[in-house]
Image (tube, rainbow, N blue to C red; front, top):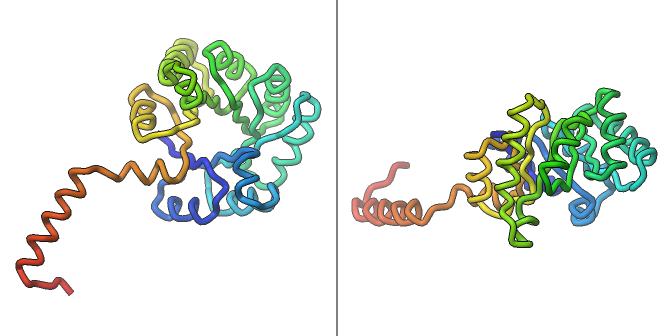
Length: 217
């Protein structure tokens, strides 16, 4: 499974990237706002740091305008992945930009039917939103499983990018189902290392070591 980091925080990306935990980055207008920086500037810096795809999202609502914005964003760096919403206009933009050789991340997917359309429109990635489905008392993992089954049935090459990840369990469950990629905030990825028994064991080791009176260095 590939790990994308869902942030525009340069320091957070660098920490994970130095550990080899970053296969790509996803951003959106909300994350750009949080960064307090210009989209072209922060996207270029991320692209220079990370080898994998970096999703930069269009904000237009009409296909022609999305296409123009997508072409502009793609000029920032070779590894920019243009992010478009799963609307009819977004699918039109996806088809045109994909045919031009650009990578496309079709976002805000909430149904298997939408995922089929994205694959047929040439999407590189489809981003089903797990957490937002959970918020309305639906099981987001059911959507991941449905898309996985459909894509495998027909050999669609579009990669399933599990998004709106809220917990470690989301990551593990998506991995078990067979999502190709997850994108999560840095805090969630880092929390994968946490376990109460690890903490308990380490505390015991440290206590026992103190009793030996020894030093390694």
